Amino acid sequence: MIQNPIPWPNNAKCAVSFTFDMDADSILHLARPKDAHSRVSALSTLRYGPEVAVPRILETYRSFGMKQTFFVPAWCIEQYPQAVEGMVKDGHEIAHHGYIHEHPNELSRDEEHYWLRRSIDVIEAHSGQRPRGFRAPLYNFSEHTLDLLLQEGFDYDASLMGDDVPYVISNDRGNLIELPSHWGLDDWPPYVHMSDIDYAMPIKAPEDAIKAFRAEFDAMWQFGGLWVSVWHPFVSGRLARWLEAARLIEYMHEKGDVWFAPMDEIARHVRKVIESGEYKPKTDRLPFYAGPLDIGKPDPKVPA
Image (tube, helix red, strand yellow):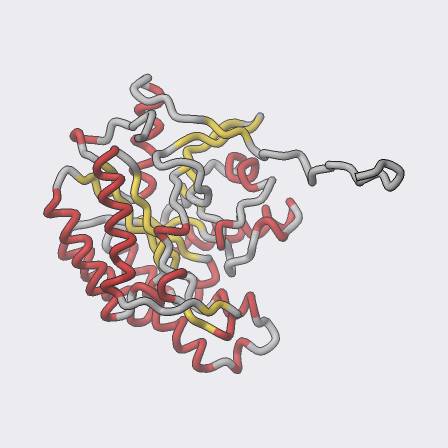
């Protein structure tokens, strides 16, 4: 069913990356800047991520010998340095996820570039490495994002949803590896119910929610795809939910022929097999449109 399967290392059936967006309370300050400080219950929910869930997640990764990727807004790095120190100590990748979860497609090019560069500096200061990957907050990749990422020397993006395998996004400046996911691999739809940010979904039992992630994995394993979860510590790091996640990891290991890797390693592999001619991915040239569509207006003189 995948027309152009990619060769994975050691003839693995698929590649897997459990990515976490550690947004913490950045999203509340962004959504409710005037009174976020007074929404104490919501703050406690969001702080659960870096303070309780991240150590739990790291412990599980250690038990399986896994190195994975955390996308962390730079403001959250500054607010919760101990959580990020734990990630770095265990050898996980720290990737770019904005400064305070601002939406690139709501900013001017100069504003987007300012927050991109400011966050790069924070990540480098706390991790010792310049970030190689980027995920736009809320997937809100803008018409300028690719050009700015290329200008700043990024290797890959993880914001888009245009394939089941890695592909290439390009413009006149150059190209990046795109490591796609989709909303079916995001933990917000089955779990998040927060009136403070006007997002209310019916909460699923963990054993029901995990079925969707497992079905997505089984399909990727069968056809040679890329499975990238987009999870959040304050969401999937809750006890019962993370217990099911750990069982999913165990299931993947038991099934075998799975390449578990952080996103930067996957991007390097993709670039390598493209350059060797072993893999010919699709290429999306961005932006898709130069501006808003002009489809004209009906002429009142012309009868319908």
